[in-house]
Image (cartoon, rainbow, N blue to C red):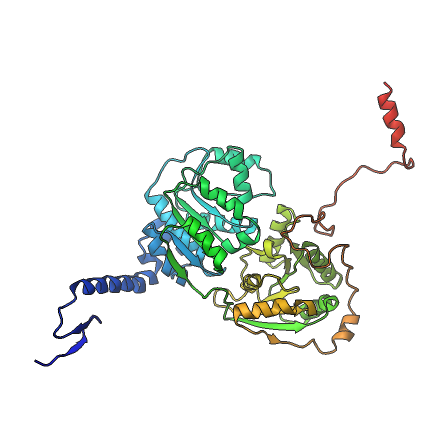
Length: 481
């Protein structure tokens, strides 16, 4: 009898003359079934088995097809699995964890316990926390689940009262979360689902000790989700601390940049960067642009110089109050201003459509930040332009970025007649003492916010006409009684 081999119609291999591999066929069919479900059911939200109120909310926002990270992550999360995801901003990862979480919390409805939450989402910045909370409210608008967001920079008393009633979903920054726990306004003992978003940024901001403390306060039995745009060894080790046998999904190789972003680099002296930015903003067809600086005072100085040249802009950074940050973002979203100047920390969570340009006024000293910066453009299938202004002392930063991203930006020369055009512009504002570009927003020891048109001026009583030292007499009068 002649030996033969072949492949069944299902694709499973067989060999004549050998025992049929029944167990192998079963495993093969299970894998094929899973692939079939991924390829068919997950092509449309309506076939995911989500609750009707969630589908209704998605339809109201015009969402019908899931993104790649949602395709990979939602089935596992609906099963209650832990998940480790590598995903850049703008990939739809918020919906990837919000939709199955809303589904599970709805199916397992419970009464809210005062001073506790059922789901905890940690985000590194106020803006990102607010954005995530808004997404939960949008997706769960037809559900009877409560959402709260807490962060620093605003009075804590209102947040304490809010926690007293208990919430289903809490989105928080680590510092304010621990403040509420320390004041016994909040306990994590009832957390069923925990999400750590932007883990790489958490470490950059020095939240590692806060995260370790949160891990100790969370119940051991929970579902944990871990997201990061990059996955170096330190981030992976942090993930191991929170996750148990996680499903791992990745929608792009670590540290890759958006394919639809055209990247350019211009070599220019540090003192000429302001003139270059002003000239480009006036000459380029720009819908909305983000300008990144390395320091808070640097961001304020760029806004001031642009205003002197007749270009309206606003700054967003850690020294701005929460109302100022919200007002700047609202003006940027509405188109009232087209230029937003930001530092890396404050820019996390800026989710604004129609950003056509990203300007790296100063290159980040951490290469991964470059990936986050230019990821603000080219969203939802659009294209974008990223321009980097590179001074001589920033060339090592550029080499680190090229090594990380495996992309070499196209070198763009200075505009024609640059020196003549620069001479016509208002003289740049001088740097503040000690602001040599080497301080970073995460460092301690920064001074008070720069005073400009955006910052509210402190009110002082009018000066008295008396000379220096006249207060001494007033002290003696008071003490002599």
